Length: 376
Image (cartoon, rainbow, N blue to C red):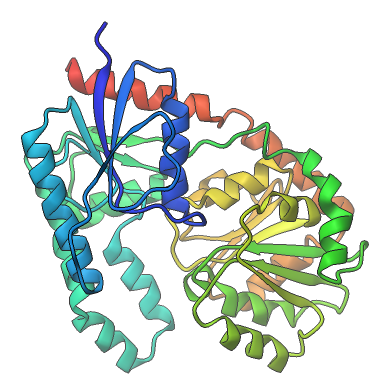
């Protein structure tokens, strides 16, 4: 049987970007399947065994960047035949759209909760946000669109609410994780990582992993840490342009010795091994890979109601869920995992929760969807 020719569109690859890492994992999951993949991108650093086509027109600024890339992709896919064009960017005219970045309108609504009145006005008139909303509208109203892949039921519900897309077009396919790489055996790194960052071996250690601290909930997390006793520590892994501001805030809150900013780490796995729980009180996140990685590594997870991965959390069994801005509730969740024994028990159940969510399952679900589209 002739392999399916698939054009996979993603503008760029960032080593610590969750959506980009999903594409890398998808490529890995499709390896050996009856699918011939062509990756259409501006910039990619890891695509072994995949045909890569670069579309990199000149641009200045975010609006021009996204518009010029979209125009280049439409020109390319208009000239070359692919059985399926699957875009991970808001580009109208694709057969399949993966809403891995969620719904921009919903992100703006959640972000508005932490903005001043002036900030909300600036957000409303920002030309880039207006462009993205128009692009999103065109994607979902395109007559060519056959399928929408969502990485959570939350995102499907948002798309239905904002755009009225027919329910039969949706495919909820959760992200996959390498269960052999992300494993409770990572605890072998516990002593090394804790010693590197001056964290006592017996201290309850909460781990935050993410870039873009405002969106991911660092302000509320720092506030919640002040409500715990002095034995609790927080390790923040990730980058932010305003990192200095958050470090100053931590010092102002008296967390000098208990909140450690480790910066970007090319290999986060040892940090999962060092921690007792992952905390991600994100304002909005369709389905962060870090939640899967942490659960596979045997960590319970505390996250927010606007995180798609909250669908995996069973309250009090493998983690906790609260509103991103409810500091007292977040502190209460943290407090319930201060006991290493309890955190370990919930972490074991977290591992069990994700043991069927491997890369092979994700790849097979994608291939079955492609087959269905081509033979319907």
